[in-house]
Length: 326
Image: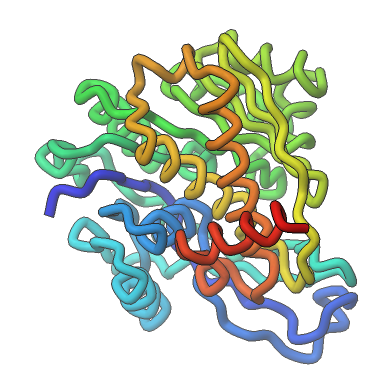
């Protein structure tokens, strides 16, 4: 299979606290949930009907094979998933605030996804690639850093849109300064950058449109800034648009940004937008992309866990119809 979309990065297990509004210390127990931002995006794209493959490394352990099954069940091609015998699948323990905002504690000392090597990336797998997505976690250490850059370069050579989520997790980096430097350094690879308001401030020391344009000046033709329940704003060279939030019953916001990315990439593919047209997106097309992505992100907050919460195209369109009717 030569997929239309390829996502590279970490696939991990989230152990989510059974109760909301408690700390990890206070939690009485945890429910196992598949996760990892790039794996979430892969599953999100597949749920939306896009032919999608996942590139990444998990442990040759029960959790790694569980993630293989979850992604396969979601419709993701896992033929390029690698299995590491010297390190385990990454784990994250997650406590949810009363409003469903997650607090993460990671177990990665090291874990399998950190050991992905450039030579494990198949060039042939990129032959049909139109969209490639990666995050910042595999940029933290070698050899996964070189593997990530190699894959992004292969996608660019084939004319694919390259999407990047800086995904700030400061506790995983050696220092704040190194996190900022390496996360920013990867922008040159990207055609699209999805960031939260917090990440814009961290990377640019600016906010809003100024921060988004500062990111665009370093490579991406399109920058999307998410603002949680308040919606999102998207910026191309020609236009800037916003999409409001949706009234939904929030259970768990884990993976909402990944659902947003999947929705954004899906709609760009639906509109037939290639890399050369990203910077020229006008207000109408950009609004369609932002509106669909924002609804996908909102829906994902209504179900506990990341991959289990990712919506289908029909579910997103149903929410948009309800919102228009209301």
